Amino acid sequence: MFPGYPTDLFDLPVYGLARAEKQAMLNGVLQQLTAYHYRHCQAYQQMIDCSPFDFRNAAGDAQLPVAARLFKDLELASIHPTQVFRQMRSSGTSGQASKIALDGESARRQSQVLVKILQSWLGKQRRPMLLIDAPSTIKKAGSMTARAAGLQGVSLFGRHHCYALDDDMQLNVERVLAFCRQYEQQPVLIFGFTFLVWQRFIQALMTQGIRVSFSNAILIHGGGWKKMKEQAVTDKTFKAAIRTTLGNVSVHDYYGMVEQTGTIYVQCENGYLHTPVWSDVIIRNANDLSPLEHGESGLIQVNSVLPTSYPGHCILTEDLGTIIGEDDCQCGRLGKYFNVHGRVPKAQVKGCSDTFS
Image (cartoon, rainbow, N blue to C red; front, side):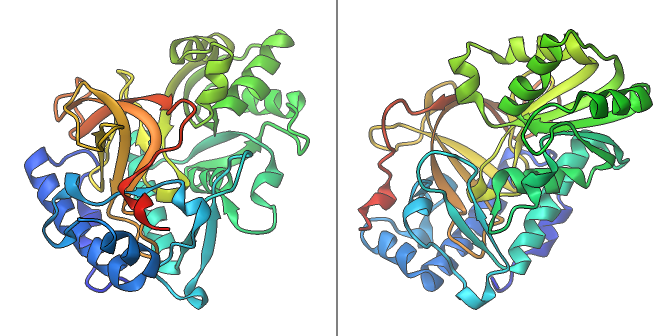
């Protein structure tokens, strides 16, 4: 367990800390985490020792990021195997899966932060919930996937859960229509992964000429935009189809990854993803990894104060994005807000942590 972890961090407002105070907090905790993982994870120690990085004096944007794909190739853990409470793995179907070791404290902390983030968007009242997935997704043996973790985590905000898909991933029309008839005049929560929502739910309803009329629903969805773009489906097209098919639905995309489970970046009413107080986003030049200014497109680095059982507090992703601004979004939420443009085309990211072999 990470000694001296500042537990009062979780009393902070999710989007209520301005830049100076937030960066001072993040810099202090991230430096502590880097020092801790340096002592407890040999592979991470070798990465730092092979680089000119001085973690003792590094601010947040100078912290050494670990390339996300290294979690597919290496066992990066800062705990003993006997302390592993749960192993998370990425949901991707192609290539190796990332493997993330969590102890009980890390898993609890991730759940706590996910709840606080989602409560700021959904409120504390549990809603009838429609899950665009199959019940078997969270029942499969072995380590938990990011998709299953998402279903489990968000389901805490629902009641009268209804799975829209059968175990063969086909739409159960009768079950969905029964749910809609019962709850369409109440506040409803809908959750699913983007491509499943589009292909297995919305397109299936449209093909059969079925429309429903929710009076007050919220859809939280994330991931799967690569396949969506292959079908030329934009965020605007997606939202329009949702509202045409389902009625009055507030649609919020989110950005997140198994390497930092619990930290999600939810899309506001103006179409921007927002950083909660416990995390940060940095955009780096793909050629030399130097930090870029707001408005410039580059590689996304995500920082989080949550990972203590593995060195995942500073991760260089293979996604491209742009920070739009900080503390001045018209939605009123403080913190950086940004857009994600997609994966780096036909290339693997070579980060500073790739000096380890």
